[in-house]
Length: 145
Image (cartoon, rainbow, N blue to C red; front, side, top):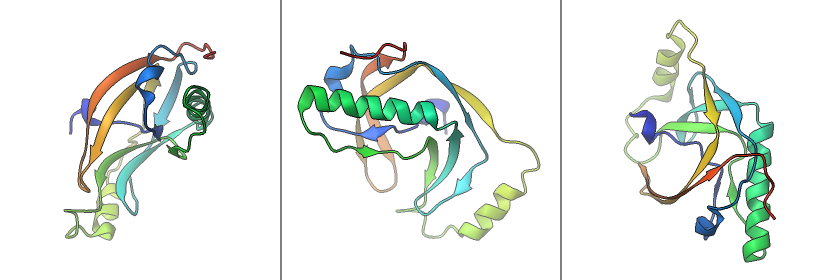
């Protein structure tokens, strides 16, 4: 998997392409930890959650101001999905995978500077997520009007 294939989803929304001129928060550094096997994905969780939650809330407010009442599917915590445990992963034993991850005898955490958001049109086929870039939004600390 290439680094460019990784993403940390903030929220799923419709009609965000007009937000490309709005700055929605300040840049921040997130630290991501050792992979964990979950119900639908192998993922790495990030912290601190505070700047992540602020950006999600600001994006939701921007959507409500520009497009009226808005119900998004917000990500509740910063995470990057490395692989999905749904379609195509039926033969993978979660316990064996957890044991293999635990056997890695070194820290696996790393930091990521979050200084922009990538707005994308996205498709999920049950096994993979693919997307086409629409716009980038710089995180400058300015609150949109």
